[in-house]
Image (tube, helix red, strand yellow):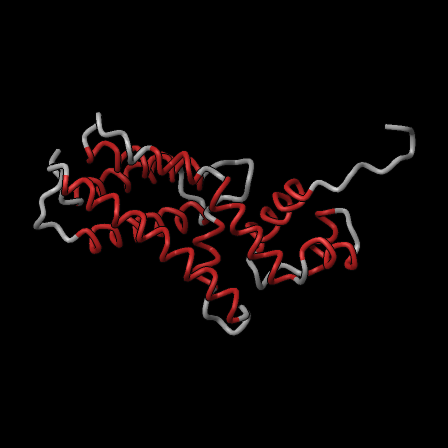
Length: 202
């Protein structure tokens, strides 16, 4: 690249930067000025690349859900060679590691966004996107539990939907506690209590 020539715009890098801004400030607490400063572009360039703030947020949230640790965490639930209880423990420990990471903001972007959804400061289409992503995550967990029932690893008397919602509730709680400064050790202790409460064989 010749001297003085501008580096090509990297959409994925820009999405990652925007994701961290929303993660730190929330949707309502993030201004266009915050975003343009983080991305190093002006407003017309931001609009041209991503549309408005709402569209950029939706893209950044999708980037977070698909690329930031979530696929790797879900794989911890899928190893049929490991007892289901220990897979759930490994999954929750992975969540603890994610929400206490010192590099990005502590907590979870999705959980923070879900807490904002439905408020007057969040547009309806953004709230709808957050609800849809949450439902997709819950459905995937329910489907996994039903597969375990078909394999005999989970009693058919166990409510897969209720168990999935319990696990998701624990994840939300871990994220909020991490955001408030709880240590990894204390959060793993919470995860252990939750795992003991899940109605699966040990």
